[in-house]
Image 1: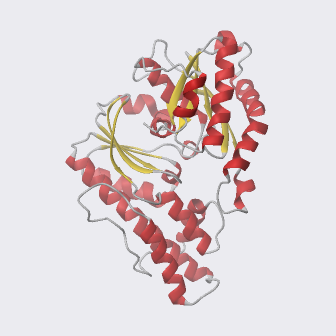
Image 2 (image 1 turned 30 degrees about the vertical axis):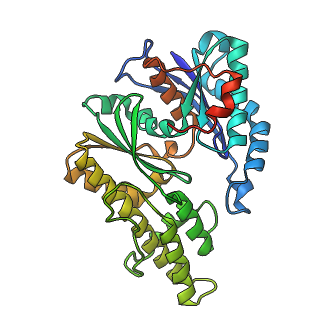
Length: 352
């Protein structure tokens, strides 16, 4: 079985082709035949964030070219005969961006008479864990799985009792952790995107230099809040009365902020894993590329003796291979959905 994946939820235009067992079989290797991503980071950097209208315009310009590259790398010569399903991100994300991918996918499905599978962007991130070691994690009984999804737009704890069976047990009440990284990086003059910039700068800093708060770390629920931490970083820099922080101060503030942000994620994830008696903890999303977060979760999950998985760095960001993988398991569970034109607008706003 070969599945074409299309992802345009934000500012990456991505197309991928994966190959897997037919009929779908749990535990078999997922082969990535191609995974092409066209990033718009340079375009949006000068604005300090993604501009929806510009992102959609770039998707229109890029999607045909990225599609052709995806097929070329996968050595697909006859789309109609060699592709079995088309999986596309249906939401959540930026409406204008999502509609470009959905419209393109719908046109392909109509032209080649293929089943179109609408995939949640968050579900795609979860399945990024299956891209590199699907056979390895399947050797164990992994369910229930607690998924920590961390990205620029999402910070969620999702309990997964089986393929397609999800329950959100915690989410951010305001800013996502990735947004907080971007905003603090901007305050420090580190540029955009903020996640990689903070992580790199923090390596040279002292995480104990400035005692920043970890909001809601002691709350009885599993929700998150990062607006207060962002504001605390702003007030800290004002109190220091420095217009442009020196490399040393920037490194110390970055390290202190990163520690405060990660402490909440790790503490709540471990606590939820114990309360819900999960067998596995999976990490995913753009912020899952953060070295310190990966290190801390690896250490803490060992202490509570659960299986731990994190995606390869190349699959932490938005990509179409993860969408294709999620579509693969959706087809297995007979939850593939034919996205008709009248459903596209509605689906663009859906998460799980």
